[in-house]
Image (cartoon, rainbow, N blue to C red; front, side, top):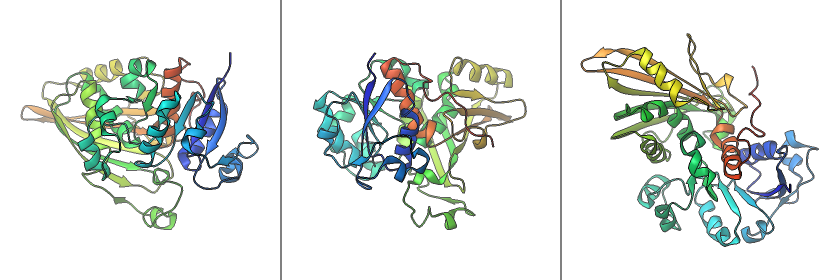
Length: 352
């Protein structure tokens, strides 16, 4: 059987490096081309040192239409706003698309403009739902039929999976309060004032509090999963670690809910999921247990009764570059193509 020919458009960032690290060893895929806006002419291993000697591919500068010629699938690892224009250029080529940006995750052009700070270049495509949302644990059956996948955001994946059991059980209503800390690799390969190591290594700081662009994506996905009338107040935190996200969400449930019921809700929600680990027995999710891998740890804690409600705290942890980025994109690609979902993703992260 001929292997699927893949092009990676935007391959010099951390997300591109992680896609290549996985796809170069995918038995059903041939990475045939890698394009970029910088480091043109350099070998992949000259930019991503961990890939030195593993491929002879070089970074090419090509118009999107030429980049996808002869390809079966295009992985897009470019910034928001830039990606939407590239997508519109290549739609008529017939190539399948897996987009890691946020340009086609939402169904509302108004929400996109509000949270991304620009008008969408093809707002009708959002309304039409041209792209299928690529979170397999929520949308697997739709991904199987898709040609275009919008891979979820890192915070969105972490927070959504932490709350998914309550959404599916019809227990997620009212306000959700979330704080989530993320590693520096989520800020990209080029250092900025707030991401440069000397300023981040011993620091904690928030950014975009209550207005992060993943807020509407999270709510849209939770509603898809069965949540009712809920809202989200989300505060992201920049943490002094290279990889990983740890999310803590606070919600209220009826006072009658018991620990035994919640344990069953979490067990039922993630039964059969390859990459989700429900932790307990005195331990809660940890970044060190998932960093470097495509796995997610989820857990919960139940508070005392206050009036007619009691508090549930939902925890989740993952690697922002793998399950929160490139790994999830490949997972959805595997589902879309009918491959084993775990292909090139099954190995655990590093310990320690």
